[in-house]
Image 1: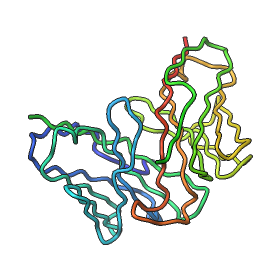
Image 2 (image 1 turned 120 degrees about the horizontal axis):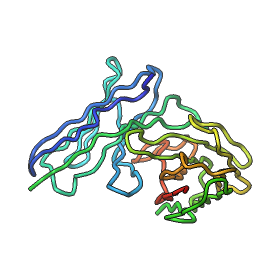
Image 3 (image 1 turned 30 degrees about the vertical axis):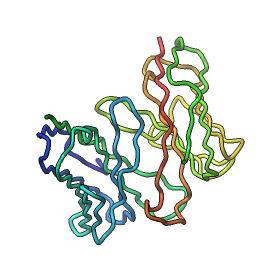
Length: 112
Length: 119
């Protein structure tokens, strides 16, 4: 049973392209959602939280579809520095003392 | 800025040795976590702790134990290291999720990782 599923990629895109990643989760009671970014040989870092109404942070837009249980991340005007692995993360319950569930990640490679 | 530090970046140990990995956070976080990350398998939770002296098994606790005697410190112990425990070990910490803020609740902050090789 895969609780959080992502296409591992790699997604190879040129600079300036728009790219989208999707992620599905199995627990319909999941409460909060995130995208993390992990650079090669570095630790994961929070990119953005994902809200029900959708949210945008510069070139990045995150969307949540609770009915279909998927989360998306859209990157516009891709930069070389966007090359990384993007981890979809789900918190299954809204209470203290629970652990986040991480997807295995989607690898993005942006080339000039 | 939140800081999570791990005692070593690289560690080489022999099969059968007892191994201690230390993690310290400076943000007064209640929650702390230990993961291992392997190619193709992603991040897998070993243990987590939501309070001093409290611990919960994650997905792959076998062969590991943990200790949380102080709020800021969470130790991972490999009782008898084996070659299949060669991996990248990542520690993380977070608030317990009652907060909010721009970056949302339950954000986990990770340490830089310890690359452990067991020979």
